[in-house]
Amino acid sequence: MNLRKTKLKEKLLEKLEETLKAVLPVLAIVLVLCFTVAPIEPGIMLAFLLGAVLLIIGMMFFTLGADMAMTPIGENVGTGMTKTRKLWLMVALTFILGFIVTMAEPDLQVLAEQVPSVPNIVLVLSVAAGVGIFLVSALLRMLYRVSLSHMLIVLYAAVFLLAYLAPGDYIAVAFDAGGVTTGPMTVPFIMAFGIGISAIRSDERAEDDSFGLVALSSVGPILSVLVLSLIYKPESAEYVPARIPDIGDSVELWKLFAGELPEYMKEMAVSLLPIIFFFSVFQFVFRQVPKRMLIRTGVGMIYTYVGLVLFLTGVNAGFMEVGSVLGQQLATGNPFLILFMAFILGVVTILAEPAVSVLIRQIEDVTGGAIKRPLILTSLSLGVGLAISGSVLKMMFSGLNLWHFIVPGYTFALILAFFVPKIFIGMAFYAGSVASGPMAATFILAFIQGAAQQIPTADLIKDGFGMIAMVAMMPIIILMLVGFFYGRNQETKNE
Image: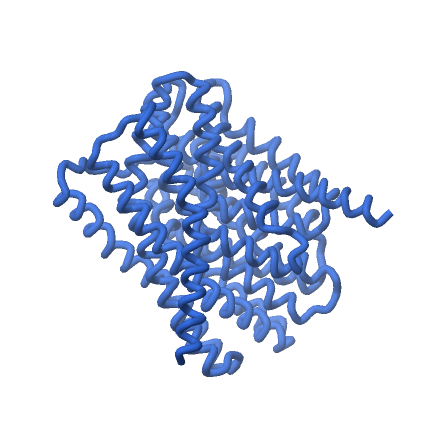
């Protein structure tokens, strides 16, 4: 028992160290800006610092919980399901899994509120069904060894065709859907599920295919929203940014966090219960996991719950107003300054995304350490930095819109898919899903919307959602380029 407590303590300290390395750069950049070119009120500063404390503790518990629960559950479900060798059962369970895990994503409910012309329940069910269908297609692709690059070309051709026919405001919303439905809850789970399926295969492409599930699953929500926009014929997608209350004293500061905490306790409970129920039924039928592992998994689920509640409370209550103020203040000054700071904020903020640590660990495990942590972090940081600065640049020129970035960007990425090692294709799309997580959807979104309020050529709806679409796309391109040069280097070594 003491040995187990010691190991747990060591794990917590390891996760705390990882979290501090990820979050402290964000804190440092924001504090430097606030004390120099972008002054903010003391109440907002205190909310930011308190939010940072909750964010650090939340990330520590979430990453530990993902290791102990989410990843083992996903792997065991994937392995146990595939061992049955019954295709109909595998298809049915995969669809159900994709459906309930997507329904569990709290950000999907937020997205539904932004599309008033489509009933919330219709949008939520359609997107969840879309993820379920495409998760099934990803499973069949793995089993029948279909080329991921060919499938992605066909699917994105369909996306661009539907986007051309859809109302203009819905293009950004649709691409946003691909990000919010593959968030910190679903991505580690789906990735582990893919690893579990590929584990029963002995061929050299098994590890490559395990990353493809997230790549295909992220297409489903985009197509679902675009199809709904054609069926319901909406005039526009409306977006009303959340009201950020003024913080005049310590009592109001306490009320701000005390009001957010119960909301996220409820949301995360609703999010995790379907996954727990699914795994409980699976365990009852297949008896896949031994008793000791079940106890460990249960403890891990508690850590995951506590971590996500604290993280989301800290980000939403403590970071959003600072992001909005920074955007407004920087947008009123030198345009080169806001472009530069947008890049820097993108570079450091991605480090604080809760699923990034899970992503890096899974990539290192699957590749046997061939692809190192610094390479992945550098690629992600550059990609998100370019995405945020590109979003600001788009606001400054009225002639630029999301089409001018999305179509060439995805086209370039899909062309590169034919020239990179296969493992980089799924990995790149996986990274795009992780990058467009809670930090992007709160702190960075608030920053972009704050800037949009000061830039005359900006549009709050298109530029707000367009930023998340850009954040989901740029890491894909950067990691594809890394894969291209990595492959060329390997060829040179082998000659």
